[in-house]
Length: 175
Image (cartoon, rainbow, N blue to C red; front, side, top):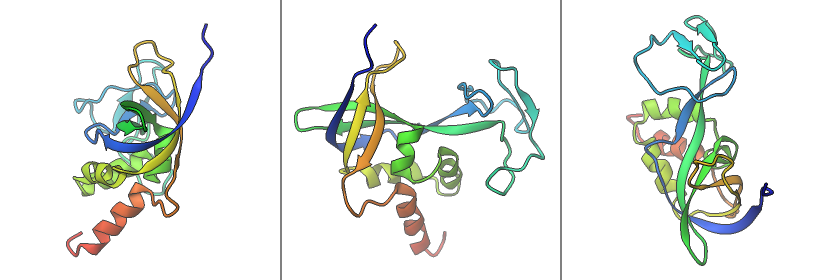
């Protein structure tokens, strides 16, 4: 069996796929849940751990209430990056993506509900950003892209995506 070889490189963000920045998981076992609007919003069910919970009156840990605390969103960002020799696609999951976005995937999704073009703008904000990334081979045999294990922005004045988005929307009087 091959040892997990990691590679660290300097790259530039060429583009991100803003159409699917996150996915939903069971907050109990963290298995992926299907994206569906057919179930009532106050009841969720995980087939793996058989966790079902009526969530209509459960407060969100952030203070307010949420319609579905038995599930949560995690980042899964597909992006094209360029090194000095090639351009390729990588996938960045929650821990690494939080560094660039400056928030949880749930917070970003809540913000995007109020500001529908946030995903596209996030892509524009990150385009051209120079990063030091550590890449690993996918652990899943079906996975197509290398995984970003860690990311460090190289710009000294780097600001996370959410900081920039909040500032942009504060400048507009209709938001």
